[in-house]
Length: 181
Image (cartoon, rainbow, N blue to C red; front, side, top):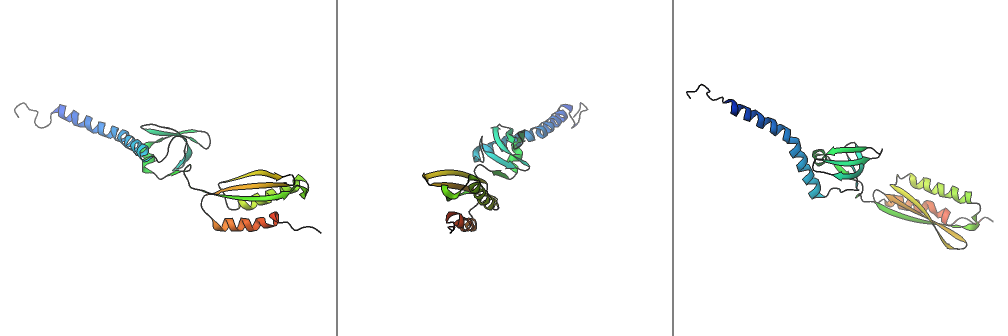
């Protein structure tokens, strides 16, 4: 070439440098967009679900093209880039399968003071708690004028036949108390 520039045209050099900078800068944007598409198309979670990813756990409040906004268990808002969500292992706690066990324990109103029933209920709840349930809900039914029935609904993270058998065996003396003579 006769103009003295040779192979190194400054315009081409700057275009190459600009292109490299743009490619590096847009890499995160593209990764977040692809992560967003992955989240939306796979329906791994949706707004209102409770999710756990890496060291974050919370309720999904918003899903955008670049991040997912969650309210964590401490009430703080956390923004997680979608590229991290698509690359990490995610647990959707809302969709976790659980097993519900229901145990009904009748008590005669004539059993005595309410404190006696309260103590018995605390013993039963304590025994159930040894198995680390997700939740224990206690409600009452009054089938007739002489009885109370306490209903224990226990959510467990997985099916556990031993738990069911052991709790039923544990409840037998409460359900069929020995008559005092």
